[in-house]
Each structure stands twice: as structure tokens, then as C-alpha cells.
Image: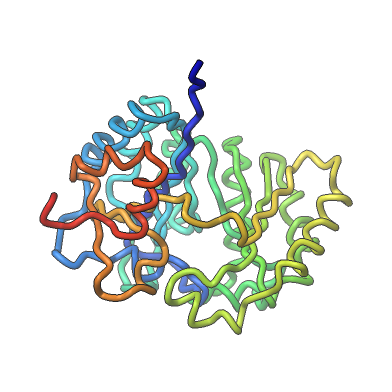
Length: 308
């Protein structure tokens, strides 16, 4: 008797074309604006057509929207509403800057973005992920540059999520500069009643920019596990769940799609110019989702543009 095996895929819509900070350790720095054939920005309806096809084949119940910063994607409110209507749990990873006021991006270009209505957007988002990489601006500034008083700004954003009872998670990139600061970060987070979890991600030199700065930020897995294990044990009974994500095990199980609909693997820019890309508008990509080997080939080879 055959057994239906649950198939899980991590799909991240990296739709934000710009960001409100510049991170020297960013894994996504070139991919967010990678558009070799000058394709138009993918619409909410085009993304939904892809999502529906994937959902027909596999157990797709959750999607992460990131960037850059997703608050720079012009169709964001429309998209999250459509995803929720389809029964998709949306996790929105954002700095949150444009929730507070009109805000200027700093990377890769400088542009002004209008304030985003947090209350309206939050109605359709299952969880909002906010980064916090230090308990002081000095520590945060080692990894995220381009904004002053980022700690205070982050606290104001977290206060906003608390005001509207929005489920919120905290993402911490653990690196050389904050390795001794993790408990202090946790204690800041613990001040807010709506924080459901804090995720500690070991810095991984994935992507050309992060790889170029690996000596600046990289830590050993042993140190990462030791520090996070201490926190998990000390705060085991705390309502905020502590999760840790070492580099091992975070390999080729993510499908990233940028603002132009291009599907890619995070290492695509570390390969040669022979690395090709595929677009979600190409119906042939749908058949690659279900089979493990074919799904991996999306990462390794992509899809030829002339198939689109």
C-alpha cells in the first residue's frame, strides 16, 4: 500500500527591490534586482497564478515575503490579501521602517516610499518578522548600516505591532559582533507581549556579498550552538519560543522568487555566467516542484529564458 508523503517546500517571495538599510552580510544583495532581460515587475495576479498551481500539487500552506524590504514592493497589500483568501499563511520579513513614516531606501538605490498602513496590512499577515541584531546601536550598526537610531526605531515598530496585537517574530543574525549580546537582545524582546518567537540564525556566507565579508562576521557552529543552548535552557518556560537555525540544514530547500518573477538559488551569483534563471510565468516550472530531483535542478540549473 502506498503512503502519501507530505511534501514541504519553502517558498520565499523576495519582492522588495530596495532596502532601508545596507547589510554587508546580506545573502540577497544582488538577487533582488537581478533582471538580465529587463522584465517588468511581476504582478500580484501573476504570483497568484504560480501559487495556485503549486498549491494544487503540494502541501503549500505558508509563504514568506521578503526582499530587500517587502514594503518597497508596490503590490504588497493586494498580494497578501489574495494569499490569505487562498488560505496561505503569510510571514512578512521586514525592517518595518515604512510603517512609521514616509521612508527613504538606501540600497541599492535611494528612493522615497510612502508610509504603509500597518493596521490594514496586518489583517492579512499571519506573522511579521522583525530583525534585531543587537541591544545597542553600536552592535546593530556592525551588521546593518545606513540608518541612525535603529534600535529606537525597532522598538517603536514593535510597539506598533503590540498595539494592534499582531503576531510577531524576531530574527537575529548571530555573528562575531553580537555573539555575547544574545541574552540582552532577548530581554529587549521580552518587553513586548505579542512576540511569539525569536529565531537565532547563525551567519552563513551565502551569496557573493556575505561570502566577501565572511571573515568579518563568521562564527563557528560550536560557539553558535553553545550560546543559543544556554538561552533555550535558561528561558525554557518563557512564553517566547527560542529557535536556533545553524547553517547546517539550511541548504537547497528554499525556492526564492524576486520582483521580476525570477526563481533562483542563493548561490547563483557564486557560479559562473553559465548559470541560467527561470521565471515563474513559465508553466514548465510547475512540474519541477513535486519531484525532489527536479526541484533541486531549479536551484542548480534554473530554467532557460527561451522556454518562457
